[in-house]
Structure formats: structure tokens, C-alpha cells
Image (tube, rainbow, N blue to C red):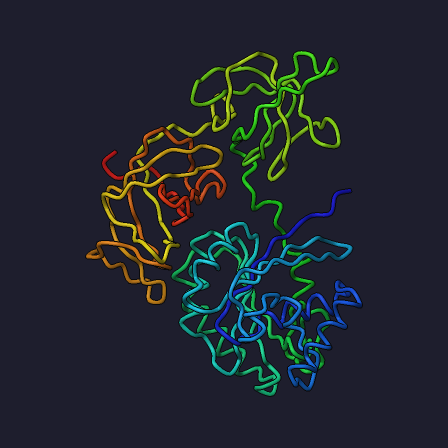
Amino acid sequence: MTTEMLRFATAGSVDDGKSTLIGRLLYDSKSIFDDQLAAVEASSEQMGAEYTNLALLTDGLRAEREQGITIDVAYRYFSTPRRKFIIADTPGHVQYTRNMVTGASTADLAIVLIDARKGVLEQSRRHAFIASLLRIPHLVLAVNKMDLVDYSEERFEEIRSEFRDFARKLDIADLTFIPVSALHGDNVVERSAATPWYEGSTLLHHLEEVHIASDRNLIDARFPVQYVLRPHGAEFHDYRGYAGRVAGGVFRPGDEVVVLPSGFSSRIARIDTFDGPVDEAYPPMSVTLVLEDEIDISRGDMICRPHNHPMPNQDLDAMVCWLDDRSELAPGRKLSILHTTRSARVLVRDLQYRLDVNTLHRDGDATSLGLNEIGRATFRSTLPLLADEYRRNRETGSFVLIDEATNNTVGAGMLLGSAPGS
């Protein structure tokens, strides 16, 4: 039996305790080695801390340790008998919003931390909005440092009420509130006797039990071709396979499929994996599809179902987060676009508005997007893209923008559909 994987991201304002919370999760779930713990204890003592600073388990960069802040996205892995986990510890500073977008883009769940003393801040709303924009299916609001407000139920309910009011404006399907103290471990892995009024689950129990199987699109079959396999050797005579990762739906041997953009059709002869053939493939499995017919297929093509496939489109309407500090997104600019495994060039046709992620105000007079800013823009692509709306499929509905001169990734986009007037 394969253990299910949960990807989750943590976010929050500076000093809300994200790194400490992750350190507590790793420590209390016995997911760190003795030498790691010894190194953290030594570093804590060297820094003059009165206790073992579990935040040092994730603040791996020297600059982060010296400043006591999280700068880059730190990925950590751990597992329990119920589930495997990949954690993205994202920065809290406003100037690192782009890092939060990067870290949360593939997450099944997001944890937004709030300091019980400070309550809901602008950064709390910013991170909740980005989680909503990225359509992360599950959001946990962890009200941290409850020990510093005497584990007050009244204070917890105040924060929950205020955040609920804001969350009603967002598209959040599943919202959970948990009172915790990362420093002392209250309600992180073990239930706390200090919060007898809280009847919900601990954070780890929620992470183990939250239902994610239905979050992935198993209806729209999408397989972007990444590589064409033609192995050498007599045993591979006439073998031609198409390798990639399933982006949606379920594929089985015998299924009729169509290849876009050519429109040629065939049937799946077999589905191969590193461990041998399988009877079905579904997201996010990496597999090789072998078809019954020899068809001209190359990287960037997409294998779909004959009566359920995206329409090739060159006019794009998208929400964009700008990630570059040396340039801006503005009408008339030309960029490269990478969508699934397909590359093209795009022209920025129009910037419809810039969004204030704190107030959700739309500035229709904006003429450009700068670093960390989010807005709605339209593009014209040199090649038709085989895309779905992001709300329907996060894999085929997202793209990145690349500066042609520097080859740097400068933007991330979420498709809303066809551009107006296209």
C-alpha cells in the first residue's frame, strides 16, 4: 500500500513562529536525528537561548540564523505511519511574497500562523488571499503563542471571528482554526490540557486526516508529453513511449486518446512506470504511455480524451504575480512563457487592474506590475496553448513567464480563461 503524500505550506507575519512550529512538528513526531538535535542544542546555547530553539531545524541559511528571520523557502520532509509530508516554510516579510507564491503553488494545504497577541495583521490577510488565489483547497489558521495570552478562549474566538469575516470575501473551501503554542507544543502533536475549551483535533492529527484525494481533477484527462522514449537494444525493438506526469484524469490501457495539437487519435497499449506496467495512471503519477499507433508526437504535445480536451488558444486572460525586482510587467512587453511542457513567446496586451491584496481593491488605473504585485493581464501567444482554467486544473491552468534576455523567471500566472474579445 502506498502512503499518501500531503504537501503543505506555512505562512504568516514575521516572528509568528512558523519555523518553531515546524521544528516542533518534526521534534514531537520524532522525525529528526540525534545529531540534528545535538547541533540545534549547541547552536541554541551558543546564541544564549534559555531553551532549545527548534526554529533552527528549518532556518538553515546562515543569514537566516544571524537575523532570526526566514528568507527563502525551506523544504522539509517527514512522515508518520498515516502519511508522508513535504513542508514549505515560506518567508513572512512583505518583500518575500514571491517566495510564498513559489512555495505554496503546489500545496494541498496552507497553514497561516497568527500571533495571539497581535491578532489578524495585513500579512495574515495577504497570505490568506494568496492561498485563495492559488486555490489551495485547505486552509488552517493556527493561532500561535496562546501561552502568552494565558490560553484565553475569548482571545481565540475574537481572532477566529475577525478572520472569518475576511475569509468570506475569498474562495476558501475548507477553513480550520487551531489554538497552539509552538514553543511548548500545545495542540501541535499532543492535545493540550491548557485548552480544555478546545474540542478540535491537534495540528498533526488534522494534517494526517484531512481528505485530499478528491482535490485533484480526476475527470479531465490531461497528459503533457515531456519526453519521447526510444531506448536502444534488441529488447526494446519498436518501443516508443511518451513520458510525463499526469496532470488530470485517469488513463487506462485500452482508452481511446487524442493528441493535441495534431488531432491524431489512437489507443493506449500499456502504461509503464519505473516499477513496471500499471493498470491505471492518475495525478500526480509520472508514467510512460505507449500507444497502439505510431503518431508524430513531441515534447509540448498533450494526450487527452477525444471528447474532453482543452481548446488550443492564443489569447490568454490571467492573474499574474510579478516576481522580478529589476523590471516590470507592462503592456507591450514581450516574454517567454512555459505552460506545462510547452514553450512559446507572448506579448502583454493589456493590464486590466492591479490588486491590493490587503484590501482586495482593484486599481484599474495601474499601468504596470512591480515586484510582489498581483494583477489581471491579457496576453497573446505565438503558439496555441492547451490550457484549462486554473480553478478547474491547477496544473494545466498555470504558467510561468521568463525574461528572454536573462532567462530568469519573472512572473507566475493563473489562467482565468480566454482573453476578453478574443
